[in-house]
Length: 281
Image 1 (cartoon, helix red, strand yellow):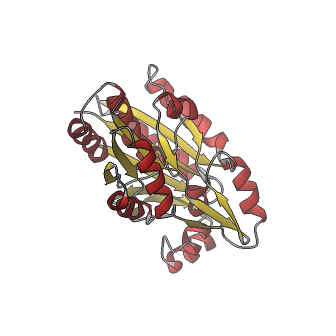
Image 2 (tube, helix red, strand yellow):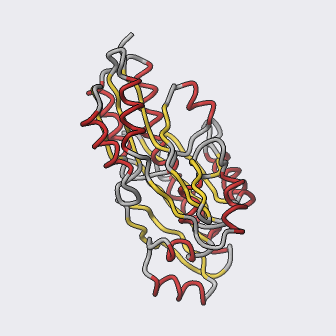
């Protein structure tokens, strides 16, 4: 039976059970650790990757999926006449969305590719909304409108305990990284349109908790918070406290607390976290 099918990439952090329930297809990126290439899939969970990265001789390198993998999946999913909506991490972080676009032009199937303008659980918000609507029988046009609204109303904050990986990976300027490392600073950044905009920085983890107090006030001032997600890169203890306090503010809301994927952790480094939320009009 022809329908709308949803595809994303492995930077999309979401609960495995939900992915399976909504029949979301994930195309894995790859990560190279000391010359060995690994797929960013179930065989390389985030916790295992953090240990491997810690003992690696140099910073792992990430790479987008081959165009051929997209073409093969698109052809397979569209063989029954189904339409395909492929939603991917921002082009500011990866060429994945462009690879998907090129593949859509080569595929025999009817494929629409969109740039989420975000990643991690920010990406998952859009993917989940699309998949839920697809299962409910909504049209592609209706889904695209809803996904755009989610994208426009999503906020993603990233906290890092070290800027080493962001500097080595070319995500921020080396001068900024060296200064922050010398001062033993923690930094929280607003991920806005592929840019990392510093919101607060200071010494020690109190920097994070003080910022979090401000985030709680920000959320309390909103009456239409639809979803919140918390991700971390080997920083569970702090994020458990964040979740506890957010759950007190939103007792009826399911707030996923997940280890982020190797693709994200490569750039954020150990001890990083992200808190993402979106509102509905």
